[in-house]
Length: 301
Image (tube, rainbow, N blue to C red; front, side, top):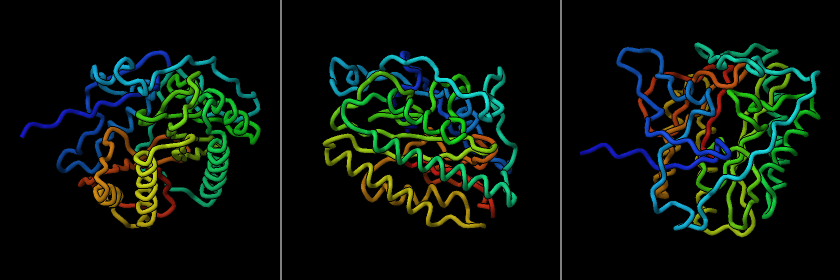
């Protein structure tokens, strides 16, 4: 049987320009290799390089008035000099990816709790802004201000040239959408992905919000993906195989005949924005077990 072609995915990641690639972003580890092939997360490390293949003619705005079209991207916002910035800010080198999992000491755990708590508070605030008529650029400005008011740095800003402080992914945009001038419309769904850099540690979280009167199909999608996330979190513990996350997510998604995006992965997070382990969200046979005092993301939402 012929291998199915990669799904056609659209992103507003590049603002005024859309970037597409038919090259798969996930590869299996070679037999006997103890490291999961890390291309996906290394590619994720260069946010501007990631997305996808060309849209079909049926997906053009002329044929589909609901098709997502990018707006204009406003200039980059400023961060006060006194706020600690990640090493990749204003660097000409790509951000490094840690070679191996990061295990936190007591101070690291405390810092991760603080950055994660702030990220969660910012995300909750951002969700209250979602309504028809607001632009994702306005959401970005509000998120940016709240982050710097709390003495933190918005991790996406300046990451491999990314121009904004938050990722706002509307409708068919899977992730890493760039905030722009497009107003949200009644019936949209929007994923808001917040990462803050506080006291040298990144706190990373996201959720999908409903805008106005959303149809039942979209509501069901958001509900089931939240259930997938909750089920995946519930099995996490030291010593558990990381691949169980993907199996748990896909088992639940299959019950409702939803597919699982394979182009993107969860990842370790801490002092480094994107690190090991790679967390695949579909059934897989990759090696690795969860470790005590390790932090990572699960990106179903």
